[in-house]
Image 1: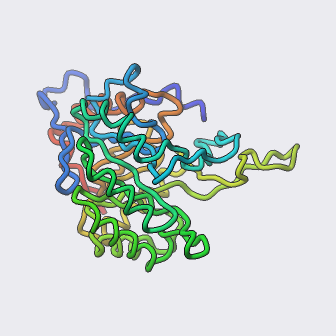
Image 2: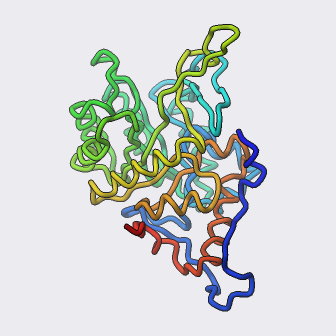
Image 3: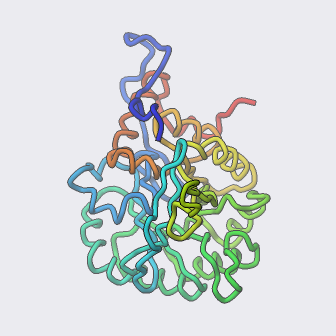
Amino acid sequence: MGASHGKLWAVSSSAPASSPQRPASVDLRVNVGSVSLQNPVIAASGTFGYGVEFAHLVNLDTLGGIVVKGLSRQPIEGNPAPRICETASGMVNSIGLQNIGVRAFVAEKLPGLRQLKTAIFANVFGYAIADYVEVIQVLENAPGLTGYELNVSCPNVERGGQEYSTDPDLLAAVVRAARQAAKRPLWVKLSPNVNTIGVIATIAESEGADALVVANTYPALCIDAHTRKSRIGSTTGGLSGAAIKPITIRLVYEVCKAVQIPVVGLGGIEKAADAVEYLLAGASAVEVGTAHFIDPRASERLVEGLENWCTEDNTHRISALRGQLQR
């Protein structure tokens, strides 16, 4: 996805290596509302499986959090292949929210996740509001989760396929229902496919969201010029990766101005400076997604990269960076 990936985790700084101003240690702890994380790095849903599959490659206890792949009432097989297409500085995917279903997750995956000190979040989705509620109700009866991430970029089959995230009334209804069902913290993952994301963000906030995740993937289409066909089995998909970072940082900035609740930034994060940019725009933490397809240890390496970055920048507490964009 570009020649620069060979230097994915390189950290640059103008500070000399022997600078006496460097702090003896860096405090990477952050708070996202009532949720305390040991560092701001969270593995994003859909790019890190259920977390436990990466245990032989990654020290999962080093991460701030893990968001498991989206969970539905019943198992879903997902979309036809091919499901992923590489693009300039990113990729387009259309997995189709394949998952084993919430009950199988509780029985087969959650026991292993409970052993971790890392915060575990369940990504929840549905095609009707009752679907969201049922998934949350099943999870409420299972120990081991820190909170929920509500995927509202799904079509509502009861309203002709209109996405929850782009219809203010639908968004309000699904967040309200989820809030009533959930005792744990509720994060709402917003779509970038809206005219004024600040308005959508305030609706989610007013209906009880504890934090907002900004943002999901961007609608996209990749065509094979020779076959005249889409490179994705389902024709269209979602664009992610480095290409979307500047656009999404702007969305994070706009949302942070519109709401009082915390924001988690997601989109194109590959190295420490990327994460810092999101924090400066106002994010309290970040999620890492597409970088896992380049390097399964991307999140773990990013934690180390942030510690090095803060040391070289003479930043004692990473939380002090939040919202410090100079204007």
